[in-house]
Length: 332
Image (tube, rainbow, N blue to C red):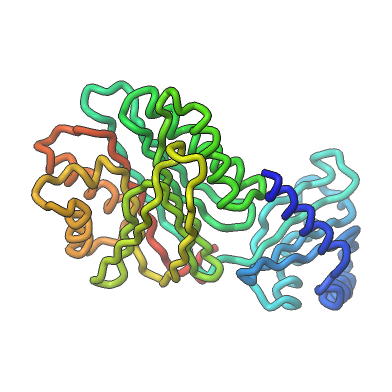
């Protein structure tokens, strides 16, 4: 936690000392003035991925219905000056919020889009699932996909997996680094180790602006990536969160392409097949034969096959999360 706070403080210090976009700020201000748009403030940041984040504060207009709002004009001017297409990330209407100014936050538009499908099932005769999953967009524009499998099944397994995914979401959205977030989650689960609160964590963070995926695995099953007719398995060997005082975490990078199919599974899905000694292979072979690129259909098919593999009875909790990468240039 101290490392995360230190990093945030350093970023704030650097912002105060250096403004690499001063020239662009003056150019944008001049273009806005030409369109009779009076601004109160303008901030420009650029992430390591190249994505821009722009905050514009303007004076209040005199029309609460929004017909005089300059939000689209500002977006076009940002595109002209910075050479990127922009989407509105958030907005505050000063008139509606009884504030002294309006605030618009823009970010560079993704070059790719993400279609998500999720399918899950509870262990036979169990009241609740020990699996938890998460699909959400982070403040930096990236997408977080995660599955946590609590050890065992039932309420205690559900408790540990929910703690893991909820903490992960909150920490990453608050600006904490991935490694620091996972170490903190591990510490919390370890503090409850007398109750055997162990949980795997399978994390994919997708940057759809530059087509990159970071993945981290704490005792989790492999991730499958289908590209064309080829299926690749992405693995790591770390133990579940809450087992060791310090987990040696490795963040892996993977370059994405349009048409890629990403499949994450909990342990119950992989272990459902009894035909293969290497149980990971049955999902690989199933994906190789699939022709559909509909994320929800793929998730449903994998789960149905997993249940059928065990004679129609779920011997464990099962969760499948599928992401399909598409062309974002045509999306609104």
